[in-house]
Length: 270
Image (cartoon, rainbow, N blue to C red; front, side, top):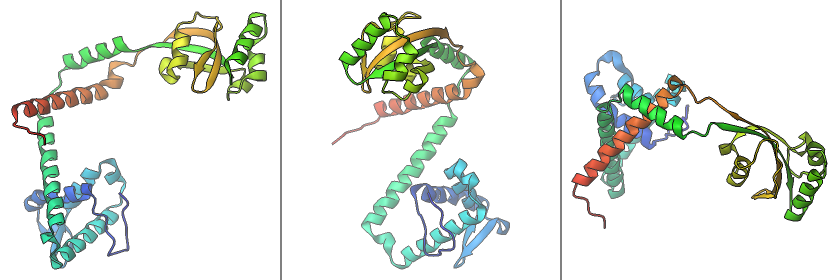
């Protein structure tokens, strides 16, 4: 959302901003002391509770936005709200439909937040999920070079040259069409996820020090590969990924709750 200042008739009424303003109504009732009023628009008060609610809805972006700019946006929004009421736009069927949808969204988000607060993740759950993920990780890394050719016949000819004793790096500099050619085809260290599937599968099937016995076709062309080295890497420590795992487990539990609610609800799709 782009905030606009010094343009009193320009306002960006995004769903996030409107939702935040709607959510702040109860907070305004609870904290509507004069000291909390940050602006008035034709005697209608805008409170700090509204400002904080909008900033919270915007997350990290809200923390970076100058308070004066955000207040200016709320003033613009209130001006436009009053103009809409003056014009009787709240009676427009489309506007009413949008307001109803917004109300549903706000209530749904509040329900999700309440359900999420009820979910607790145990240390055992975190450790078990961490161990499961580590067991599924591909911790192997490869160091390889390649020579990229435009057609299969050229790649086969290069393989024959290399088998006859040609230097791989010099051949790559002379014949490779890939960006690594000037560096002798050196790709450095990488894991299987870093390369296209065909290339990764070919490297994984090779032995250290070997040159591919047939060209490897990918979307980029035909590769002649030299596998220089293989190593095992360490998985991230639990504390490094704890936050991600806890968030994932909470999301999974929330999805299960919603699925259970769908199962028990009378839903008819038409």
